Length: 322
Ligand code: PEP
Ligand code: MG
Image (cartoon, rainbow, N blue to C red; front, side, top):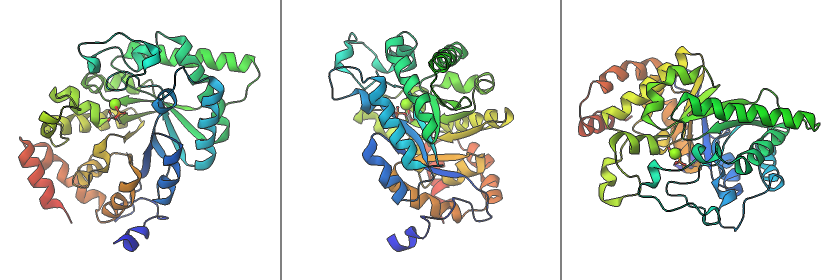
């Protein structure tokens, strides 16, 4: 099986009839880069920058961050690397930031909400990202966007940092792509507005499911309810892809669901452009992709979206399996 899978390593990810998508990797730290390449990843669809902030006792400096982003960019060469700005809060606590305990951390002070209030955190990261954009194909992504206001505020901070860097004589990619995570149902509902302001979306199903079905993603007792097969989740995914394409931008997925073998025909058929997953899933997903014709997958989407229960969806997808 390994030998068979390895034949996909250097093959462009594509459906049976040659429709190309990107199959890329998720990473949390530098040690994750080689496995992505070894497994035929075509880039990085999500670099969770949190690790730079954890297991230490103060904020990482601009220089420290620059070195890490630069290294990833260089290792990936021309391949795209999507770096997500800090997503602290929720279940990711950073002790030295001393945020007060909250009743509902997942609904609380986290991610972009923190960054927009804290220039001392956000600006060094944006500066490091821009400076590192000289060394590869970097893209910037904002997490937990729930409104146009937040997106515009984040973009305006980025513009401010660009001006500063320019004045200081730093080189960087002026046209660096800027995207946002779609992981809050509100963002799906206004995806048409948001899409006008970014170059791409990436669907974060881990949080999107949590907020849609109201099920804590870390609570074992209700883990069964945290599933992408819920019809509401499938509809939100479809809606996001359609809104992105209507606005002419590309859309990826970097939640666990992107590497879900059963879900692949639905995602391919719905038009997802980029699938980002842990390195171990990449070869398998490339193989399954190669077994499906795009039009065949497309013809299943309406059927799947008409199903009314998780069990029906699961059954239906299981029967589709090749
Ligand atoms: C997600 O929410 O699906 C996601 C990819 O982000 P994280 O798991 O880091 O919250
Ligand atoms: Mg998330």
